[in-house]
Image (cartoon, rainbow, N blue to C red; front, side):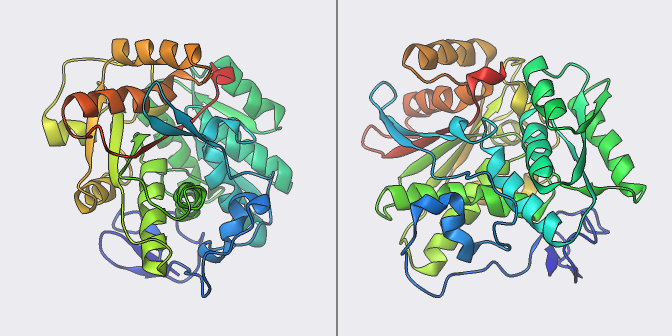
Length: 354
């Protein structure tokens, strides 16, 4: 059962509609909650939290339980999402989305992506024996394109903006020929990214950090973290919520601009979050308000400097990853994060994707 986050209309069958008739995003009406306490087996990866998920591990590559590593340079803990099977956190959503697609007997899935989500969907579709079409910007990085092509997916290059890529993909979906495995719209994807929060809490002995700083484009990880920490609290496994702090690319920062006013800066380095119209922007603002959170825009120069510092410290990430550590420094300078705050920052994609 799915419910519209805007008008409340309900849809009986998952996958029958990719968004509400009113245009609003759909979510699962009832999130599963475990009946027992936090006795989990980390060797199962993120599927150790199957009791929170809407499906079982029908399509898996052993994803999850990425390392949580202390960083003295940034005085935080980095969660190394870039060691996921395809090199990004998007594998969390891909495994749950393709598992549900496989259960429903789907023959072909379609996704639009700047690279990481497309590579994840293509790879997990290949694992499931499901055909995939991935719509990408014409300027997509060659390394990400190779990952999609080598998985056997059809690549559809689209000229224009990232929004033009989504529009072309949606046209294909609305023709009735495709099943939309979207990292921005599909509720199963967010159920998967919520496992980031479950793992952070488990790795910290069920102690929730004071704050979590994530990159913020469509909000795939930001909203996943919010839903995951909220589910843990509702299940009684934890007793608090962290502040959720977003990091956007200047020039592509609708959430930060609404909170703080627009910036004249541009950031074409963090290409993974160049989203001007997030599908779930209203939900992002709700999560910020509910957790006393925030969102800020980062300039190209600040992100580039932080990327160099990450590499020098042994964290080989792609450029988009650097927005979150860069934002943490800025949040601290502004007094939003105090010196005593316990902070977790995901490093979301591998430097091998550059």
